Length: 226
Length: 251
View 1 (cartoon, one colour):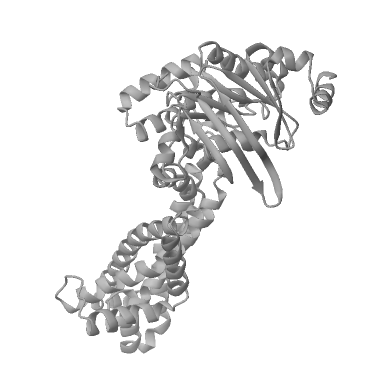
View 2 (spheres, each protein chain N blue to C red):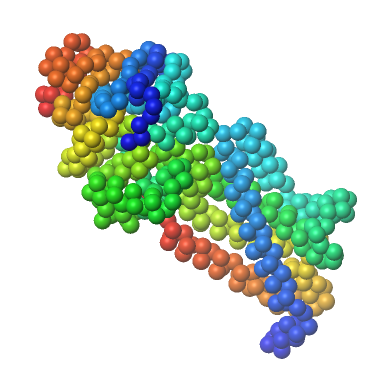
């Protein structure tokens, strides 16, 4: 089995494919944290049209299957509307569109986690901030969101783990990440099915387990003492 | 504190009414607070005194009437409201210190973000204020590490850091253990002596007698008596005030 394993790693770019998975995950994570924060600010804002947009966005995007979103970025944005995200090469376009789709989708879950975090911040905190003369954006940015973030790092870790595994859907539009390579390897080396599946399952555990552990540790460190 | 050009009353409340659904919580409230006056509001719980205090800086909206602070009517919302609130210091029953910030950062936040002071300047003022309320040595701690009395003194320092024209106190000692009440009242008494305009809701009769210029007694959403502390405690006129005092002073 050791020999077969060595051959597989020699003939296929397994580490390279996982590197693409990592890139998809990290870029989408950063983007979805930012966009999710913007969405939650809209959902709690005093402006009705922003609240309406935030709620409508969440309800539409969260309830659409991720595969549909990812395929739509490729068929709709790129092939129909000609959006190439500033890239020229086929695989780069697919990669960037996939990141866009993951951000659009994952931000919904970031937003809803944060919104539950906002509910854990006592009303008195924002009242005290308003009484000092801080405006809505300042109250949210300096007082409410920092406390909300600290209380939802656990749930956000789950969102990030789900995102890591969701990046396999990028295979649907031909992005060369781990799942696409696995499919190719299983087709070519059908007799090594279990070994190949094991490699990729273990590979994802190696990516997601530390995410959970590190974020759990951070969650304890930054917890707001009341 | 900052002296405005106008010499009219600091707070002017005219015909204010407020409802919570069918409940009429503020009934035709009408009064003025001159500059430098210390007003203590007394009354049984549910009499509307807390709502009145919160209405003055519009943490509670009112249904009819007007409230003016230093000659300017409270705006409904937006930046103008935030600017006027910055001039009204507020101290809460539950302290409401920002739980994720140290004491010094609590005090510095609004001067830096709202008044746009430089950090070093805000830090110096904050340390002076913390020293004045006797907790300069707690500056680097988080609110949860302080006793209730220390937290409330920090909250007073935080409000004072904005150099407010008037200070509102909404039952500042009601959430404290008995042995910590005095240290907070001492800070408030000093503030009163320095000429700060104060609007204090409290159950501390000793403070009302000692530091107040004026006592307003509220019951069922109305101001029933409005007089000097001496007059109120020795010669209450209404039955509701007599009843309230008999319940409090027998203990």
